Length: 229
Image 1 (tube, rainbow, N blue to C red):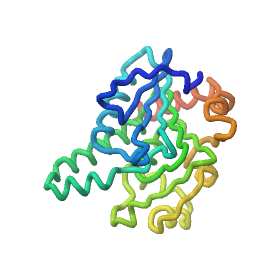
Image 2: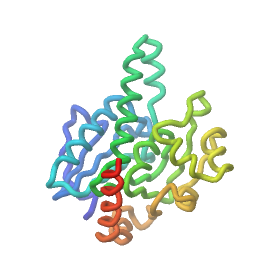
Image 3: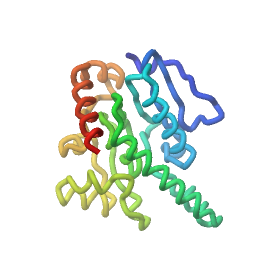
């Protein structure tokens, strides 16, 4: 499967999350490159609707999430939240947080084969919408951090789950000191699953490093965990 040759089947009325499709696969593409793909309430709502509909569609079996430009996702659009609060639209802020957390839970319990390609900047909620998923791929351009703590905001969107499983000095640097780590570091500490190289090409490396049996085994494990909930 060549991701770049998929047919775009999205509607331009909501082009902040594009959809590509080919055969039994779909790709959700975060498409706010000028904002490093920072997510807002409309994007989260669209992602949730897409993934819920894909989960119910028996014709689909393989899903991908990736970003456009030089970032996967720089996290929550805090500028938008700040503007909403200034305008007295507190309920809209609450709705965003609620929708985001529900989508993170959906990713954590998703059964179908799913890959998040964290190519480039991945920060804050960018980790929240990807790390709970089945496969997480990093590249030589991946950087990971929680810079929102410098604004007085705690790491959320599932961050307490994966950060609490890291060595103390690393979690301190990522969550409170605005340090960044590259994809290889996240891979070494178990946050991520595989590293691929952009020099060879994401599509080509992806096809070589993953096989059907590995996908199916992870899908079976995820289904057992979901039944136990």
